[in-house]
Length: 207
Image 1 (cartoon, rainbow, N blue to C red):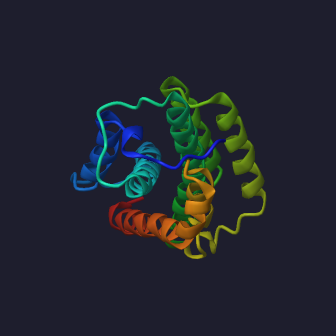
Image 2 (cartoon, rainbow, N blue to C red):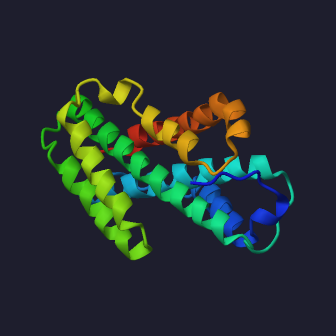
């Protein structure tokens, strides 16, 4: 994937609205999580929120304060979409493992095989949102490989979101010479967002 040094011409108001709306959603009153359907909704929406906010925040930081109404660089737009879906696929994995690990330890929830079913269902539903099929396929394969060696007793408290933070760093379409300077800031930005989601989950879960 080609990397870009961003300018104010590279982002549209339409795309920036995605970022703003994601920020706004953090303040909408939350429903309790009482069943698997509500857990699935939580995993999907919060993974999308973390992905959007961290990716668009990073792009905005590197572009500066000026932006125009439309993307006029199709290649760059393609890179942003590719980054978004790849980061999101790992965010989904991390949050699925975190929530089920937490439930097993703190709520004595034993139906752990539901983790894979929920994860696969979320990805299958994303086909209608044009998530690339090759990314979906790889995400399912990666989930299965991680599942083989997962320690459910420790996962939720043992750096559960490191891989999605590293995915943000890997996929963000920023020139490598700039990105190398940002590594610590980029990783911390996602971990801090995940801390918000962790606290929210602990307050909302009522299995």
